[in-house]
Length: 84
Image (tube, rainbow, N blue to C red):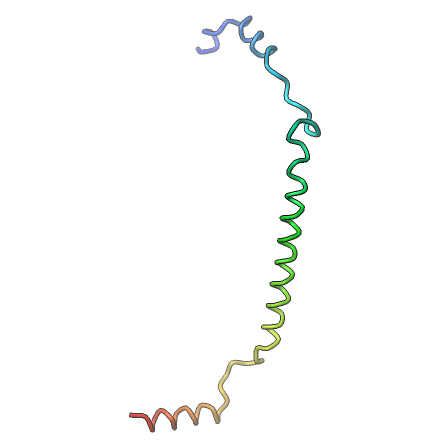
């Protein structure tokens, strides 16, 4: 349908007149983002290492169990009975 509306000669001329794409390793934009990306990746790596170290310290401080000790529960019951 639409293909029949555009003459073949005009299509060929349009395709041939297009500028070719530069190869992947060349062009004006090639290599400009690399230093910035390297800095961003290094900052993210340092932040990740800092978070891992911080989390490891906090996990080591946690008790082995979160169950209340029997004397702690008795003390809290006595305090709650004293307060009206």
